[in-house]
Length: 138
Length: 161
Image (cartoon, rainbow over all chains, first blue to last red; front, side, top):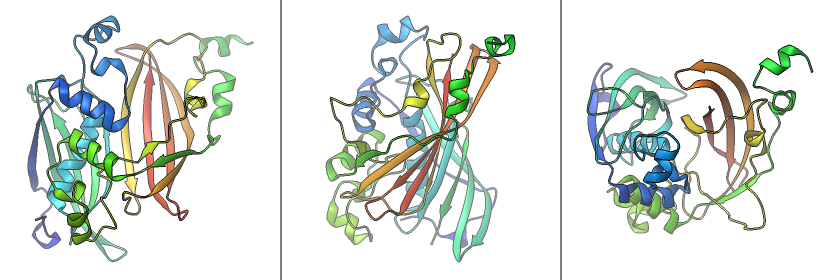
């Protein structure tokens, strides 16, 4: 089950979500999201646009960060906002570590809220999708 | 046309498009599309797959996972309704990157919902970056459900270079 607001402390790290996309997962995502841009599944097309390889969809990394938060808050809580920028490319068959740290714990309009800094990290430790989020906890 | 206009990538037509609302897009959320999306992300929580589990957790039906805002109803005879993003800059830019996504959720979105989205460009900036000349467009899209309630606001950043 998810976390409770009382247990949360500012500065605490939430459990990391580990991802590693196969090319098959990128095709699943293309269908699931409706983003059929060929740089995400056609190697020749990606190379022709100057990329070294096919790349993981930015929006999939955004969705991974959404899962990171959902898995943490559970169904008693709510993901209220998720935002990130796509600063670096991620590639298939490489680890994507999805992480978050609590930056603020507060109550607003009767809701128990938590702000977080969230990001995806590549195998070199670079933050490829830094962002922030707000969740409601029970 | 003045020299200044020639130097800017941003045309008068693009400037005039800022704040102008697009035609509405209809998006459907259904059980199959929620399952497909959840599976493609890698969710294991049964609320995204099993309607009984979703209802036991308090949802009307399968909830839309974060990032899923319905599937546009496809019409082969109608081109995608995103004219602002298609406006050509004063010098051609060939490539497109997604710069970022921010989604605020204001109410639950569940299978069975029919959403209507309206987009407007909120800003267009040009910048010199490591990719060379870049055009950065910020677009705000508001999603309403079948009851007219705003359920999500997405701010997207597009980069052309």
